[in-house]
Each structure stands twice: as C-alpha cells, then as structure tokens.
Length: 109
Ligand SMILES: [Zn+2]
Image: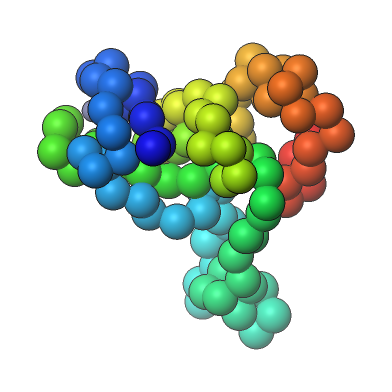
C-alpha cells in the first residue's frame, strides 16, 4: 500500500485519500514549439522501474497538488514537496542517492 504525506497540511494517509496526476516536472510546450517538443510534452512519459517523480493531489483533504518521489517497485516514498517546485529539492535527491545509488530520471541523478 502506498502511504503519502501531504506537504501542505501534513496529513499522512493511504493513496485512496489522494489522486495521482501523472509525471512531475514536465516542461510545458505550446504555440511556437516545434512538433517534436509538443509531441514529447503531450505523449512521452517516463515509466521507470525504480525511482519516479509524480504529481499527486490531496483530494479528500486540503485539495492541493504536490510532488512525490517514490520507488515504483517497492512503493517506498522518499518524500513529498510542493508542486510549485520546478526541480526536486536537493536534500530529497541526497536521500534517494543514499538509498538508490546510480538512479537517473529525466537527466536527474
Ligand atoms: Zn493536504
């Protein structure tokens, strides 16, 4: 079972209290983007076996969006952080590096 902690209200609950919103840290593309960049934004997603960064919403709580870093194999959650963050916090990356040496995700390692 996946247990998440909302970084805004501090509630720790099962995933049924939250709603997944897909991959985190996507670079938005729009008018003026070339076709390959727009295609990547619309359709290409990471589907790793291991460390992954995702968007979640605290649907049955404060309603806010946040990011979570977790292992897709073990469901271990490394941490959660506000959705306004454009890159994962360095202290969280250090924790992940300690637990999963050599991990990479969209150029982050
Ligand atoms: Zn919350």
